[in-house]
Image 1 (cartoon, rainbow, N blue to C red):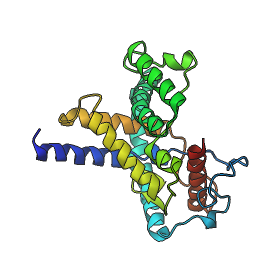
Image 2: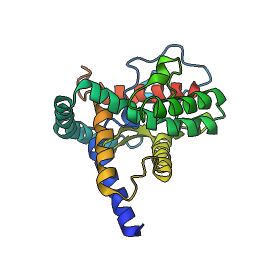
Image 3: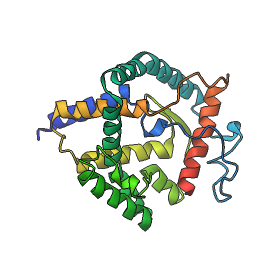
Length: 253
């Protein structure tokens, strides 16, 4: 493939994911409360009920990005999701959600292997095979109905599993709350997906763009979080605290 064409595809795909990707893995809303049963082994700097204890040296920049994301969400993404909900019947949206969830098993499997979680890797591989065949390319989810429940592993969790600290808290443009470790994890997971290219869409600009648009619309539709609707004047601190707790609990599982 021509190098310039390949780079153009990656750039456009990144922009599409960015503009429409507020519901991506970094911004998936965590539980609304802090689990009082947080394992004692979780480092205090990675999960804490004290929002002021979280390392956030880039707070002024993070807050500006947070406001930018809120405006983009309100005026770009949510209207697009509204149109999507209007034109696509619920069964179709459910099928699209299952399809993307099935593709996500690839990263979960890879990270389960890296973490030496044999059971998780086995269940994930079984889910992918069953849903890709009996489930008609993943549009249906028969694996769950037979008791193979979905796992969730990413490279940020893999790094945490081996003791990597979170690093400073970050708010990523378009993607939302994250930290230095998880931001690097997102890059690795996305890179792995593009290297494997299970849909064989690299080099096909319309297909890549369509994939990214539907991925982002589906992800945002499944995300219940709405900016500035928590009822708290300290929403930024609340989101920061809950995100860090959520990720620490995921690593500890």
